[in-house]
Amino acid sequence: MPYFSFSLKEKSADLLYIHDDLKKISINKTYYSKNTELWKLLNKKKFNQYINQLSFEKINKSQENGKKILFLIPPNIGFGDALEYSEAINIVKERCSFDYVCLGFLGKYSDIINQYFSFDKVFPIIISKKELDFFDIIFHTSYEVKSFKFKKYNKSNIKENILKYFKISDTQKKLQTIKNKKIKRISVFPISKSPIRIMPVKLINEIIEIFSKKYKIEILFESNSILSKTTELMISQNKYVKIIPKNPKELMKYLKDIEFGIFMDSGPLHGAKFFKKRGIFLETSVSSKILLKNYYLIKAIKNHFISSYCSSPCGLVNVFNYNNALGCFETLKVHQKEIKYIINAKNIGRNIDKKKYNLFVKNNVGCIKNLNIKKIINLIKKEILL
Image (cartoon, rainbow, N blue to C red; front, side, top):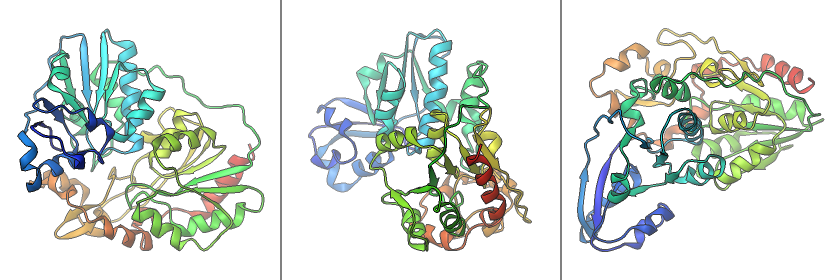
C-alpha cells in the first residue's frame, strides 16, 4: 500500500481516466495519495517528462491532541468496507469533540459517502499539501489500528475496532424485528470480490427453479468481473432478471428498494444492513458473528467446514499466493496459523492473477462446497413467509 507525494510540472490527460478528482491538480504543487493505480501510472517512463517529484512518504503515528482530524482509508477497499469505515467514523464524529472530521482516499465510493453521511469533506484520490497541513491529526487507519494488520488473513470488525480505539461504546439498538411486507421479489447477490466468498452455481439454479414460480427473482451481477461472468455462464435456469449496477450510486439505489436478499460476504450485505433489509446470509470464510453483529433481520446459515488445515469461518477474505500457487488454506495445504509467521506475509496477497479466479467458480473451495443447499432452501421458505 503506497503512501506517496508528487508534484507535476505539466498536466497529462492520461491521469483523468482514474478519477475526476485529478482534474483539480495544479502544476508545481505537492499532493498526497494512496491510490495504487495512480502510483503505478506515475512510475511509468512516459510520465517522467511531467513529474517534478514523486516519492514514498513515511507514515507516522498520529498525535493525540487536536480538533481537526483526517482519516486516511486504505486504498482499493470494497463497497462494504467503505460503508463500514464511514459508519464507524461517523460515530466518532458524533461522540468525540472534533471540530472537523474528514475522510481521505475513498475513491469511487466518495459520492455515496457524501450522499449518506455528513463529514466535513471527503477527499476521493488526492489531497494537497495545503489541505493536509490544515489538520492537527492525520490518522492512517491501517497503521493506527493494530488489528487491521492482518485483516486479509483474519477478518475483523472494522466498526468495532475503530470505536474501541477511540474508547467509544457502540450504543446502537439491536434491531431484531421490523414490520414485514408481503414479499414479491427475491434479490440474489452471488458475487464477491473473492472466489472464496461466492455463491455456488448449483444453489443459484435451485433458488431459481424453486422460487421463480411464485416470486420475481433478481440476480445482481458485476461488470468487469471474471467471477461474475463465469457464474452467469454456468447458470442453467433462465427465469430471472439480471441486474448490473453501473456504479456504487446505482447499487445503493437498488439496495434501498429490495424486499428480501440472499447474501454472500460482499458489499451488498453491508448496504442491506445500512437500509435495514431482511434476508439470509451464507457464511463461508468470514464469521457471521463479525458481519451480522447486533443485526437480526438477516439470518445466517452457519458453516462448520473442517479440514486438516483450517476450519470455517477461518477469517480469510481472499485467495493468496504461496509456493507458486493460488488458493486458500485448504487448497494450498497450509495451516492458517503459519501465515502470520511468513517473513513476506504482505507480499503473498500481491500480484494475484485474477484470470485464475474462474477456476474457483468451477471448483469451489471446501467451505463453499460444505453449504447445505436443502437447509438454505428451507430457511428461505421460512423467512419469506414471516
